[in-house]
Amino acid sequence: MARRRGIRDRGRLAAAAALTRPLALQRRPPTSGRPLDRAALNHREDSRTMLTSLLCIAARWGPGHARLVWTAAVVGAALVAVGGSAEGRSMCQPAWRVVPNPSVGGDKDDDHELRAVDAVSPSDAWAVGFREFRGFRALTEHWDGQAWKVVRVPRGARPLYGVAAISRRDVWAVGQDLVLHRVGNRWRVARFGGLFLNSVTAVSTHDVWAVGRRGSPDRASAQITYWNGRRWRETDVGFAGELFAVTALARNDVWAVGAERVGEIDRALILHWDGQSWKSSPAPPGTFWLEGVTALARDDVWAGGRGVILHWNGRRWQRFPQPPRPLFKSRDAIPVWEAIEATSPRDLWVADSSEGVFHWNGTVWRRTWLPDRTAPSVAAITALTPRDVWAVGSSFGSPSRPAIAHYSCP
Image (cartoon, rainbow, N blue to C red; front, side, top):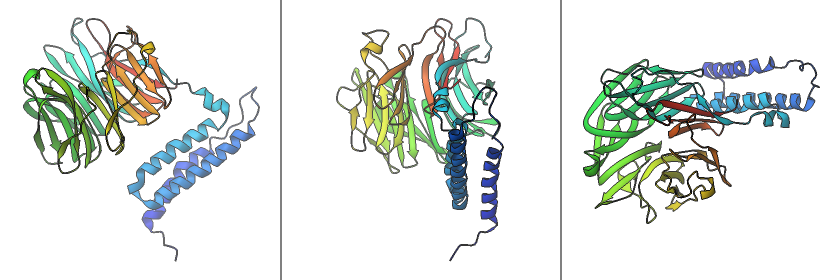
């Protein structure tokens, strides 16, 4: 028996049809001097048909499958725009470019830096850091698809080192002694005396983790604090040292990395949350501290740190080949991979503040830029797609200035 479509079903199907309707208006006569590409037109028709089908299926499945609607819209629109021709595919050659950054005020001798970045969509990204103006203060900036703008923070907010954006109206930022939560157009502040937070991740507005340390760097204890939608709960995980980065796949699958202090030696600290407790996950012997982590699946997690890139295959951590020495500016340098990001096993990004940004395409490493006085010293990377990547940091020289770069098609 066929299921009757209720009012909600008809509404979702109508919305799907409305999304595809503008595509029918995209057919235009060829520009002067260019022959009509019948194959491209046929491909666009096939793309429209595929997009319509995906949207209708997603609509019938309901709002719980909104990700499918978004994927269908992006993929279908891209296929329609490209037209399936080799000419269209070759038109897009992504490259890094420095994006104009707004003035943050202060004296000409003051230092300003961006330390973290996160993006929700091509028209919604956030970057945080600090500016020096009568002491070091929090700095937040927002990308609206056209330009970066400084967003005011509560008076007295101290430097920020991590950011996680759930949506345009739901953003978390952490730093020295505080957590900022943007709800709508206003920041809410939670203060933690003596707690230094380096990174934050969120799977929902009711599941947020932040990591860092309590105490001075030489006598620190690694700390994790969790927001359950009502209050923060701080946990001393029982290790001397500090956690530098955290990422979450689900509320019962969270990874945090950093350094454990053992006597006078720092060694890698990797912790995993399974929904019940935090457990230590051993790194390969001889691994020093780790500064970044990104997760694609339960058996596909990446971490970067001092002279090492690690990969979790679901059973154990293994060393992954680093970019080869000939790509480095200084052949004797030991890179510190402060930033690591991935959208797939064939799209991995790592950055060292001095050596630049490197990309793994599944086969080889390639350096995508070497920092100079026009390109930033990179502190953080976030990627929406392999051709939509943001990097933030600071300019070279003294005083430093906030710097932002975008890897995309012109």
